[in-house]
Length: 146
Image 1 (tube, rainbow, N blue to C red):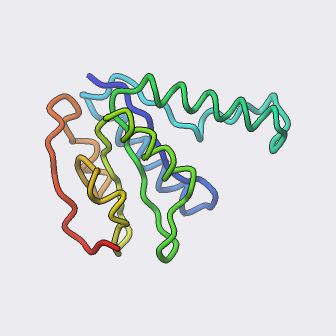
Image 2: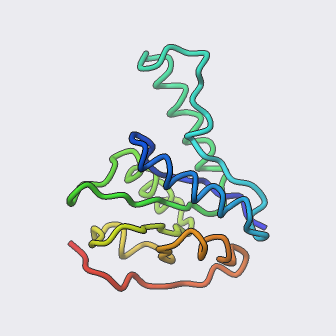
């Protein structure tokens, strides 16, 4: 069983609904020991947007990324632009040589900096609930890249 870091944007109702579908899938997956979702750790005791809050969020998320074994990254493009925080988290995971399971349910392409290092690609939360995080089967991106 693996410890997962869940990277993904949560700035709109659509993004939050997608994130919640992924969280529910991870909760059902028997190969997931636990997962950390930054959405659930907002550090509400600190003033949102303050320097203290920003540093605390960054430090906590980086520590959780470092302690995870696998990263699930929700790739949610607006045209050809991905959330920069999610992109940073995926890059940090890649630098640690952690497998990144890319979740992308919207149609369209993926930037090569995500499509090439991605370990596997999942388009439906149901499939994510059944993905074997112990065996970590590999899969290539089969859509367009830019």
